[in-house]
Length: 197
Image 1 (cartoon, helix red, strand yellow):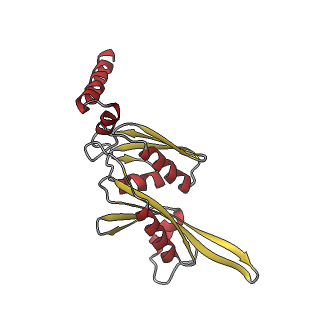
Image 2: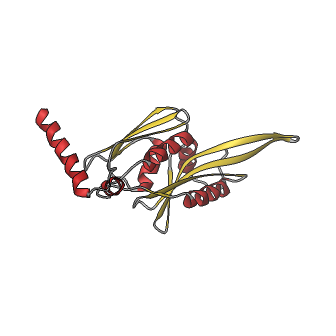
Image 3: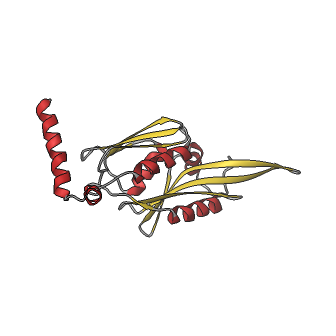
């Protein structure tokens, strides 16, 4: 990929490898997950354009992703960022640092698995999934990709898993019970497992 005028070499290398690039914009974190050069064959030869995949989040439980395509990289990134901001979803987090429960997501041939983790674990996840979780504000989680490594499928599969996350309050409201009943059962089950081990 040709280097733009005045573009630092390390940024170009990161972009070509598909590494997430981060930008902060008034408390909304923007991460460039993937950029792809696509060519359309026309009468005079080939016409190049760029496709960008962006993830945005406020690191407080809201995250979104978008895809943009344009003749120039900055314009593709701008379009993707606008789409991502429009498609943000809210995800409940436990103690504002991890997921409430384990989850799995699938999109096409892309499958991912995410597990809640104890404090100090950090984000153990690769590429596109890591970008989504960092933008969301998760601090401790273990994630694994199974199947397709296509960044578009991975991001969509991650969002499918995040949409299924439910807090004890949401579960209690759905069942018509108190939060203490739901959490009490979870604590009792954990105690029983510890006793058996």
